[in-house]
Image 1 (cartoon, one colour):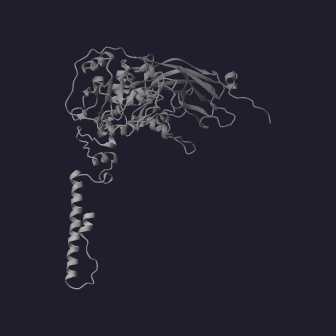
Image 2: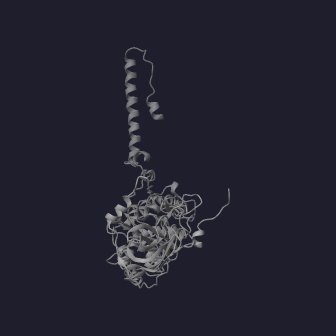
Image 3: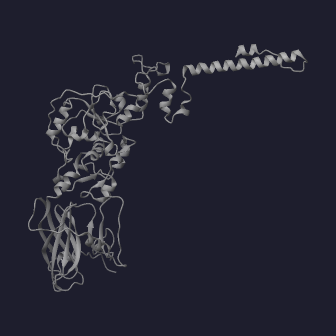
Length: 540
């Protein structure tokens, strides 16, 4: 601009007449033209250096990516590097870094696994060394995959009925993919046909189940890999078959007997599926609950999520085939829980051949005066038919009639919400959680306790003429013992046959006709069990 200023050294006064005035006007035009030429040259120089980039904040919602583009880094070209002072490491022993490396460092700065109990189970894209066997277990390997990754379709671990294969069959799948038990392995992969979910944790679970310790889950999958500026490819890769031989670890795969016994159960399916029907006392923690934008939540969030679970007890997580369950199982593993996986497919298959057997039934007191009578029944589940029994599915019309036949003076309780909260007991003629015959005077018949028993049981009471007079629910008291209370107040003397009904959760109802008989008599002795219902607190 100093040259421009000298070139434009003219008289600014315009009070001189004639030729001098015209000369000044000419110089003014020349000055203006010169300034425009110089400005154009300067702008041309900038555009020649960076013809297609302008303000990063103006050209991209992703400021981090736009900065690299502004500095000359092409994210679609894996060979592009930037050798500039501001990218030079302060470490004299460090090698020259490029934009991709710096971007990976920036991504990894936001991921910390220090609050996880097992941070060694997870890995970020920037921490991959290249010495690991990377398995793409998703369904889009042919479209694009991490450079060097080997395909292993996750459904290879399921049979044609979507049941988990045996340990020996899963070992063969891994061996055919070229994986040996000594290899360090990283797994990733999504299944668009499964709602875009990651299925990598299912293969991770399978390998841990087979005793493979050196396996990690790539947090964020191929999306996180791309965001870190790391290379992808479409060229298929393969490894020579290996001998994979290993035995299964106990506790990683639950069986039907364990689940039927009523452990800590977690249903990892969508809430709609859970609300439609669940196994036993399962609580709901879905696949999506443990993720935040495709990445595993941090330890603090997972701690809050699992607050309703007892970390001193084994946890079983289930879904239809195990894929969704594996993600919740994996999060539990990260937080130090002892957990296993189960499939609803196995449960459904075995329910068709599982029945309830009545071991013993009695009533106390019996004979009894009109009043409260406890009915006890011991059940157990058996595989195959049990005798004597009569399959009696409750008709839909009958079920609707029972739930809708409510008088205007009755109280209808509808519950929906926290399914992992403490169980509640419901009493007819009384309040939630209040025991029968309590000194509050509101009492009632206990109908059931929510979310506890692997068997649904009840009792149907008939009068001496064979007419049904009452139905009550039996709740799990201990082991296989179920108890319910029948309010026989006002009932006339006579013999009252009792039919017991029971079914595995989600299974077919079985009736045990006239399993016991209760005698009601106004002259029956007052039993200790009856007097024990009431406690004298004092006198007024």
